[in-house]
Image (tube, rainbow, N blue to C red; front, side):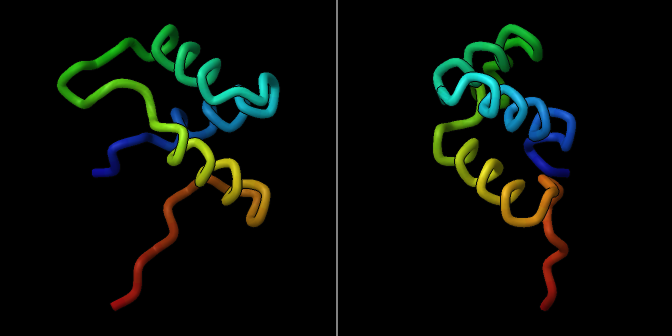
Length: 68
């Protein structure tokens, strides 16, 4: 199971497009999904940046299938 759902990834990318601020994204993420201390807090700035970059390059935030 992935740590972050596709719904959560999409939410973060949309919030970043609107605000251009990782801190705002993290704040809104906690507000919407709750601050689940067992799983950690909101996604890090690095993770949010990776999702935004992936979305800009591929149009998707889904996890790519890994090949062996």
